[in-house]
Image (cartoon, rainbow, N blue to C red):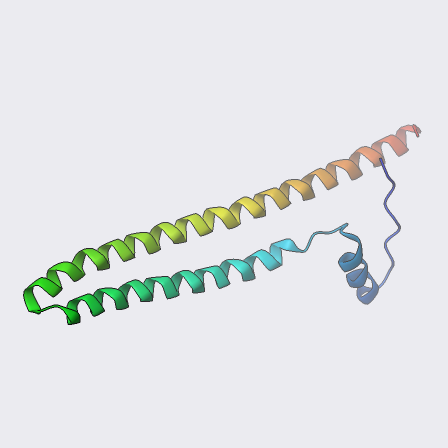
Length: 121
């Protein structure tokens, strides 16, 4: 197992050290931005389905246009809801993977500290 480098003192150097070495993962903050950006895209898809339903209602004569627009609207809203749930689970999966990685890092540090106290190399 490789030995980690010594982390420099000071807030500015510590931040730079974290960016350059991967000892501390910064993905948790980034995944929140990715999550909200993805929700924005999914919201655009939802508005697109709403626009498609309105377009179908306007294009055809009155009774048939509305009868065709209702299933288009319902299907669009259902697809948007499913996309939101899938995107949420996808982002939670990545957060979980990175949390596991952080926990394994802490366990490794505890094991190395225990070995150092016991006097084993």
